[in-house]
Length: 151
Image (cartoon, rainbow, N blue to C red; front, side, top):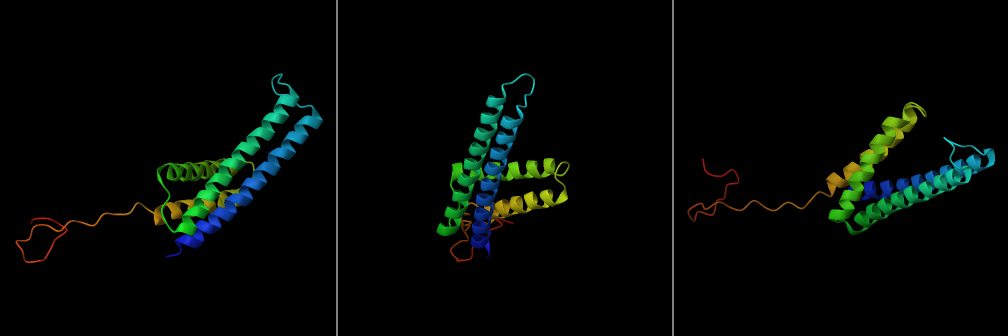
């Protein structure tokens, strides 16, 4: 199965996305600072710092998700409980960003977000929880077990 390459590609895409998001918020903070824009009387300096901090925090979140995906691919093992929840939240965030990006950015942004969402979900499904084998039913010593149970 192609689960390792998908996880690695998703990790690389998330790294690029994190860098792009930090760059976008950095530019936004510069524009807000130079234009002295204010929203409802907020200090423009606080808005500039807020945009920068939000970009860095979300970029770190995406980098953490990328590290989890890369570690999953390199070890070829399913992520643990907490990291699995983090990847699920990352998938949900990409679904929401894709839905919200259709209006202002357009359909190509939606398709890009859905591609990242698909890679994350495919990784989560492909590295699903290990299944326990079905215990053989007591068949009277004949050595033939049925998974369906008694008839």
